[in-house]
Amino acid sequence: MRTHDLPNEVRAFWRAREGNTAVEFALVAPALFLVIFGTLEFGRLLWTQSSLHYAVEQAARCASVTPSVCGTASQIQSYAANTISFLNISSSTFTSTSTSCGHKISASFNYQFIATGLFPFTPTLTAQACSP
Image (tube, rainbow, N blue to C red; front, top):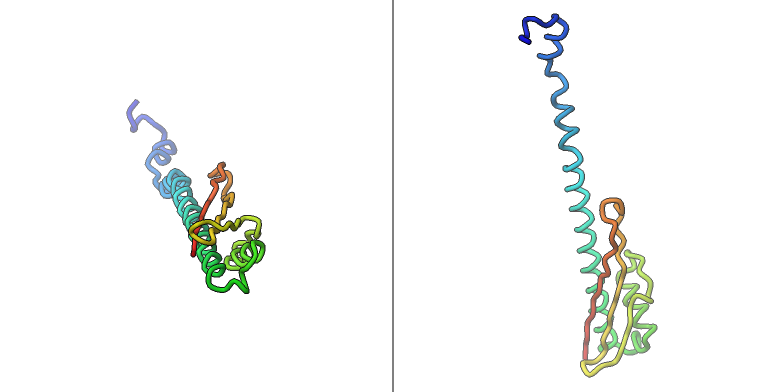
């Protein structure tokens, strides 16, 4: 069927281009939002890992340098949790042991993504530091 055989209304509809931008955006938007939310979530994950590592380093240093502040295991755990209090991680996340290298502080934290629908898994973040 040729276009000149169609009624005028159908030909006008066939040539209309007003909604192209909306249709293109509807096709591209899911991938765009997935990239944006994925970048934000993995950036937050790396920030949390870095903060956890910083907390165990500072707690190990505190246990070695100022035993009056970080003398017991519970004081070391509280110190580590307070170092990164903005993450609301409990002190039970941290463990303290005395080893041949000195005070070894470890942490294990089950990370929760905000967008759980996009990322249905929960990675375990770990960090440890030892200071003589």
